[in-house]
Image 1: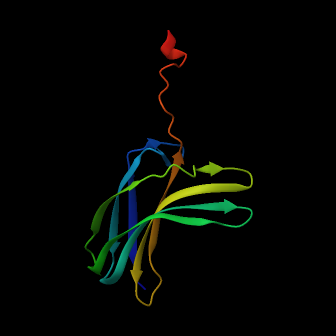
Image 2: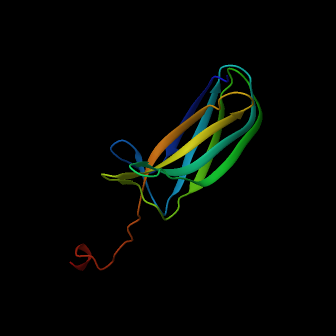
Length: 141
């Protein structure tokens, strides 16, 4: 089995309670760093923008975007770093309810032959962008 540590750092956004928050008009930027303990024959290094539901009822998962960042040998003890960016869609927004939740994440997967693929993820909140209203109460003073 490949022993690989995966770190995903999300850049920008607003600090939330537990997760960074982004709006539907944002570009999500970040950095993926892979730390292999030994040499790993990497068939593919996938990075995905996903959302899924949790809670009662049927679970749903949608892959919004996917990148294939690397193919080849990851050398043991030599970290590899990759910058990335995803354009965020307009929906669905993150949601936490009594019966269902909508969860957004960036997920990395090292595709290796004949072993369990190492994975890592970073969760974030997708919220609607609020357009500037020049006729707001504050603007009419």
